[in-house]
Length: 216
Length: 216
DNA sequence: TGTACATCAGTGAACGCGCGTTCACTGATGTAC
DNA sequence: TGTACATCAGTGAACGCGCGTTCACTGATGTAC
Image 1 (cartoon, rainbow over the protein chains, first blue to last red):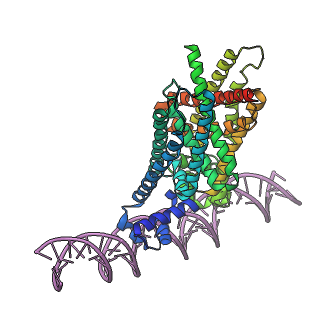
Image 2: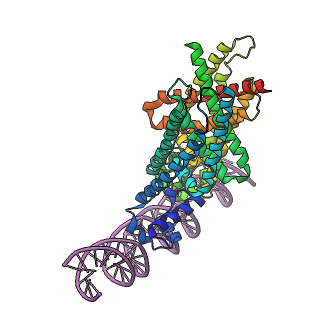
Image 3: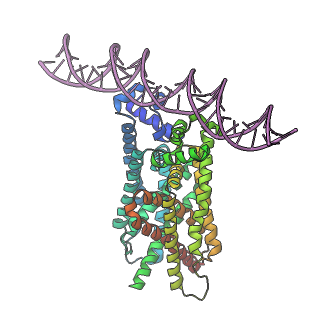
């Protein structure tokens, strides 16, 4: 049986993912599930905010690095040689997106409780946790934007576009991810939907670029 | 001074939009702000769930019809004649999107409390309210999908794409809308961002269509 | 038009309960000499 | 190697408080005859 600190965090994770949002849980409620005296809480944390923030940061750090790999690894498979024809490149990009979506959604499944808990707080009741989770979403999006910029050399003129696409994709994945976890029977459909939506954005960005070139 | 029922709803709206999520408010807390005895609550509602659901449905019905107009009105300005050249059509579509985004975000401002309250519940702590608000988002998205299908004649082959774009846009607007309300100094930037993101999806869908035609 | 009654939105007091937090205490583990 | 002390994670009892809910009551408005 591990230390009380971890048991409290585990208990909160279970409660938050199966009942209500983290911010609405009670200290006694969590201690009860952890099998500890309500008091033990104060041996490890200053108060509830301290506890919840610690938890978000701890979960967030793990998720962030894993998610980055979900996208980076398939992306590196896309050949960057200028000799390859456009058709092949597009096809490879499509496969990379499919692989990334699959890895990400599998990662959602493997860390179901952490994701549900986090996503609930993005627009949740506590300003403190809202800020923390939104910063997490933003940091994941900016990881993705960096990787898109440095690992791929995309013919996109408007520099704002890549970070925006990264943010849009990240946010949209929170919606799709929750559906994916809550409605297992729609998993295949949701994977395809995510893939299609991302390709749409990519195609749009390239089309917009061509359009710009045509004009200038 | 209006009836107690409306005063309770108004009080909850103020509390939910300025403090915490609707689901986390207390019955006594709301009655206090409404200047009523906690008891009066039971004269109008069965329990808290009944109250919150009534509120979401009442607000939702209003928002849904207004939002529909925000998109439908500018959309009808896009000429559908086959004689117009592609360049003009694109430019008109772009103006329509800009107008729609502007109207929608203005509508967010004018109904700030209602939007903040609703959006907080989309991923919130109460399963009941989560379901109700998600249904609202879905219904707004399907309004948009219908209007896109019937008011415009788009050259898009894949029938799944329009509803998906409508849903993506609607969901993304919840994120952008909250930022718009909470960070007034970024309003212009956010409008442009929303517009660009929607055009990206549109361009993407058209490019995908062309690609399909090429292949088949 | 007047009277009797029903309905309805509101009040105030009281209930039992679970909450966060504090207090004084315990026993195990680590550390200094 | 032993001993004395400090630190640390835990307990149990108690506190005051605000909560949701119930009860019996009030006064205004509507309605039947």
